[in-house]
Structure formats: C-alpha cells, structure tokens
Image 1 (spheres, rainbow, N blue to C red):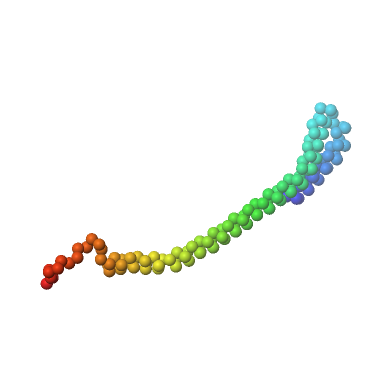
Image 2 (cartoon, rainbow, N blue to C red):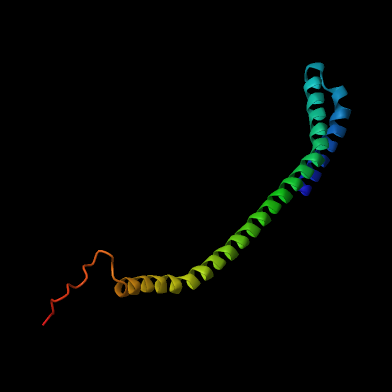
Length: 123
C-alpha cells in the first residue's frame, strides 16, 4: 500500500511539475481542466496519509475483535468441558436415585393395598 501511495505521489508531483510548466502553452479552453486535474491529483496525494492511517486502524480493530472472539471461544470450550465433567459425575447418581426409588416402592407397602384378612390362611 505504501509503495502505491509513493508511486501516486511521484506521478502527481511529476505531472504537476510538467503540467504547471506547460499550462501556459496550452490554449485557455484546455488549460482550466488540466489545472483542475493537476489540483485534484495533488489533493488526492495529500489525502493518502490519513487514508493509510485509517486502514491501519481498521485492520488493528479487526484483529482485536478476532482475538476477542478467540478468547470467548476458549472460555466457552472450557465451560463446556466443565459441564461435561459435572454431567458425567451426576449420571451414576441419577441411576442410583432411580434404583433407590424402585427399591423403596417394592419394600414399602402402598396405602391402598388391602391387608390380609384374619382367619383366612393361604394353603
């Protein structure tokens, strides 16, 4: 980018130098547009440093944002790993809880179950 700007400045400088000397030899209807063109080239070359600085800032901001995204991805990956460890630790407890609940139901009589009637013996 810097080489392009240097080349543009050199061309504008040479065109301005040659054009400035030749404007007096050019007829009036052509001299005015040539002078405006040379002035525009000079203005363009003067605007180049701020544009270059703006591009530098833009690229730096994009790089900073990419770094922020990478940091967030790393944090999310670590959080996902932590949740996986917790999930794996809780899975056996969940299984044991379900087994305990079934065992309790088998060992504890339900309130709606009829008690055995006295006098009736089973063979």
